[in-house]
Length: 129
Image (cartoon, rainbow, N blue to C red; front, side, top):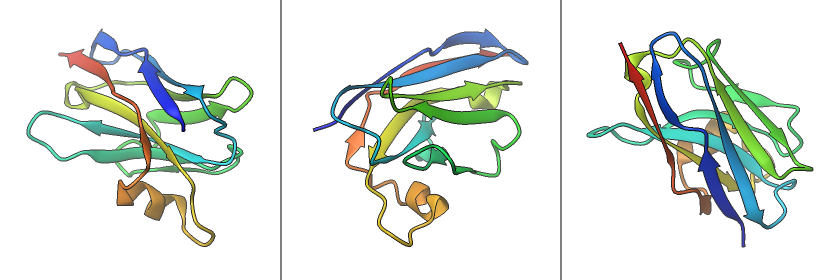
């Protein structure tokens, strides 16, 4: 059983940066794809970015490419999301997720399904103008 715990959220002004972390307190994540999602009040949960098991491949939803960077360190069992040039509309609860990715399923398809088995409880990001 994989347990995920996010950290690094907080309040920041527009244009600032934050780095989110997602630590796996139990389980081995090196065989799992991982991703970041976010959900703002009144909105559906949306996929931000995903990364392959070894970290060699990444995918970003269109709104985030160029501003956000996903990475992972399997030795530390940790997933990261570097967020730069933050905007007020980036205010949301950010969640990490992990799961096996079947052969032939792209990272984009994996991310959009939102059916991952392992989720963290989220970390709040608030961006003020």
